[in-house]
Length: 172
Image (cartoon, rainbow, N blue to C red):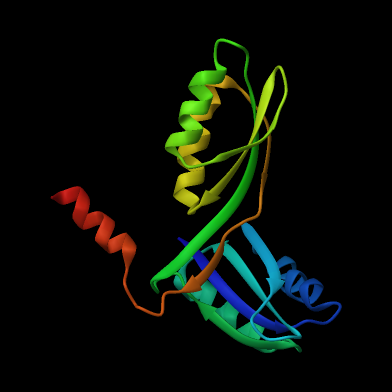
């Protein structure tokens, strides 16, 4: 199972290195990593996606708590969250395929951020599922390059689980 872990840390040199070192020493893979300033000056939020079982993740969180500069760790995997990712994708196009790619861009609410005779560069923002879906639609045109930020997430204060609501819509 993939776990999403949110870590608040003091914004000081070497913090990310210590966290990455902890993962490396224990043979963990970090599938996605996003780091940026948090709501308070001097604090950063690290959002990681780590594939492993619940017990192993629990042990990992205990180890993270022991690190200097770590303030708070939350496994937000099973908590209702707003999740987003940013992706830039460069797609091969020509005069025959450009309009079809632009239709896909509209459907996914993406944006064209660069254009040449033989390619379009798109900006896609959304949940990780949206990224997978648009990539699968664009694959037939030929993807030249992809750059992704990794998942960022915040807990929903409303507590509303939109994944649960989506599953209800499908059944109706």
